[in-house]
Length: 144
Image 1 (spheres, rainbow, N blue to C red):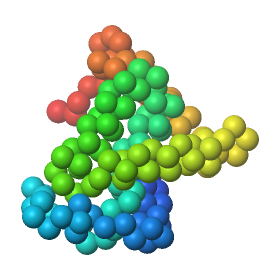
Image 2: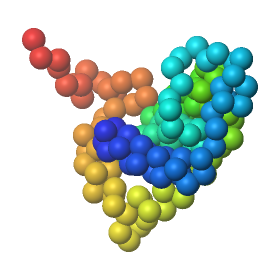
Image 3: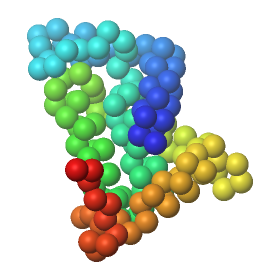
Image 4: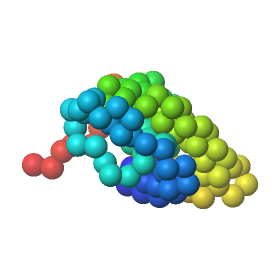
């Protein structure tokens, strides 16, 4: 599921990046000197933020208990890309707007392309709360 959401996020974000051709912060202000390597492709939208939004959506649909931690991690990753100097706040905002649109495509009630995957994940997550399995008998033992 995570790989699927990452691939969808990458493909969609690259399409928008190509369409809008927005510069990165270091291209606007060269003295910025980002703390991480700046990708060579355009800035808008933030691909990492879009991927995280899509992953959080899928996790939340599979298990409501995961919504708060998934959303918190999504926000942290998106904001850290801005702090690192490789994205503008507008890139994060655009990613959220794109994710809002994709929700209607991915999870629409009649023919959402991800509905079956979410159902399978929901069955796999049965008995799991935000802090782990609800009881020891619900947990799956790690291989020896």
